[in-house]
Each structure stands twice: as structure tokens, then as C-alpha cells.
Image (cartoon, rainbow, N blue to C red):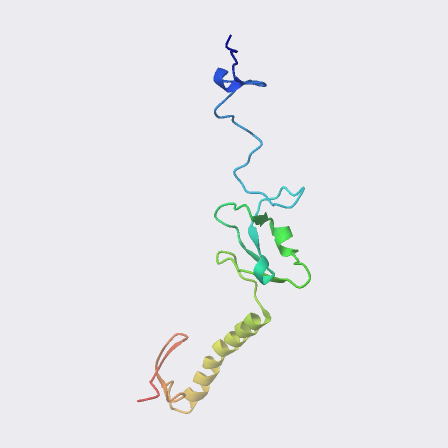
Length: 154
């Protein structure tokens, strides 16, 4: 006598009830979240470990989630530290505005000082009767704050 067995998959049902091909879920969000435990903030950076070089690389959020990378929110990416003996490499995101450094501020101050000087030079040169071109022998023409300079070879 043959034994007749029926598998649950053959009936289109599981032990818990009928199978559904697509179950809408309100739990899954299209926004990637921080990988840190109990942090639900949106991810802004991706952390990858390069074990061969003892390096942790933190860069802009990857295009898609990879199994061996960790997505971090802004707070956790700023506070990231690496294990002792490891190096952290932070790749700058081209779309994010860069923070000004001390050199940037000094360059800005020098540019402002330089922009103020031509008015002083033009007043001194104009009084001597030499005109604007006599102040700098390399200067050919001027339009506003821009100057056209003669090539040093000529």
C-alpha cells in the first residue's frame, strides 16, 4: 500500500496560513539608517575596514548597501575612532561644503588687503602725472579689479 504524503508547499499554504507573494510593510524604510545599534538616524557616510592595511575608510554614503560596509549617521561618523594601531582615512564628499581652515581665512584676508591697494596706488600714480599704466611696467590694461599683464619675455 503506497503511503500518500502531502507537502505544505504543494497546497500553497504554510503552517502559519496562506502564502503571499508580496507583503506590503510599513516597517521597511527606503532611507538607509545608521548601522549602530539603537540609532535610527539616516545614514550619511559609509565605513569600510581594510584589514590588510589596518585602515578604516570613512567616505560618502555608498550607492548601495554592501554586506561588509557600515552606514553611519552624521553624529557617529564624526565621533568615529579606530582601534589602537589603526589609521582612519576620511574621504571628503565633493558635494558637501568644505570647512574653512586657518590658511583659507588668511588667504581671504590677504585678498581683501590686495583689493584695497590698487585704489591707493592709482591715487599716488595719478598725482605724479604718470597715469595708471606708469605704476606697473608689466600692466598693459585694467578693467575694474582685473589687470592684463605683459609677458615677461617681451
